[in-house]
Amino acid sequence: MVKLLLAGIAFAALATSASANDWQKFYHPVQDASKAIQWNGLPEIITSSGNLIADVDGMWQRGFAVVGYSAFNSPNNKTSDAIEWGSQLKARYVMLGTNLVSSQTTTLPLTLPSTTTSTTNGNVGATTFSATTTHYGTQTSFIPITVNRFDKLAIYFLEVPKKGTGIFPRNLTQAEVSSLETQRAIAVRAIRDGSPAYDANILPGDLIIEVNGKPADPANWQAAVRSDPLLHVRLIRNGQTRELSLTVPAEWRPD
Image 1 (spheres, rainbow, N blue to C red):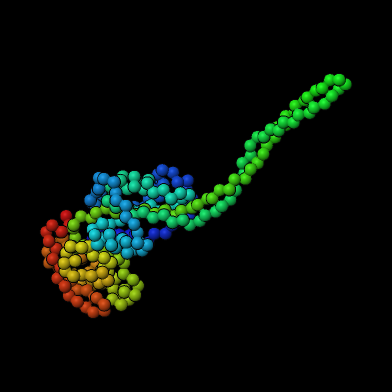
Image 2: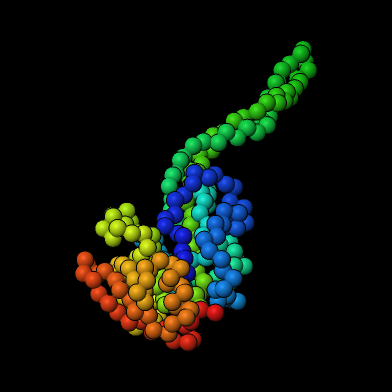
């Protein structure tokens, strides 16, 4: 099972000059990508539905997991550098989002040098004269400007090899621990399409409590997946206990 630690993404109140490497500077790895399938082209941009948890679960269903994310605040909404960083990560998909969080209009004083010239004409006796005087100073103008701030987010996805059972787990809630009276269980968050768990009709929301007669903690589960082509699974679904058989084909067995 591939563990994904992305329980939620919160923006820190970080002010940045939005330099070209901000997506790399504020990158947070979620899991080791060394065993993922790397993509050698430019990553494809995908749009969030507005529900990040549902987005991540939906990508897992397609066979892609989060390798990391970048989140920061910036005075512009540019995202092209996120694609460049995603390419360096060998990511297959990048989910991008920008959100205008503030807009403030103010004035910027601009002071420039100024000159004024005056001419004086007169007569002295029968003589006419003209004199020019130049005065040097400054003039200040106030230019209106608008300052915007954007929250920016990029989530990077890599393809997961077809190994294991295809279950994407989550942590048990305290209510589930109290109900089961044990922490040795696997809560199913999402299922990969076409995986052994998918074929066995294991569903998101199931609580797996036993595998081959042993408590379904991560150690017992992984040992069973590596050694047994047929798993006997006991789980709780909608408050009812069920027993299922799960077959792990040789090509899905972990190395």
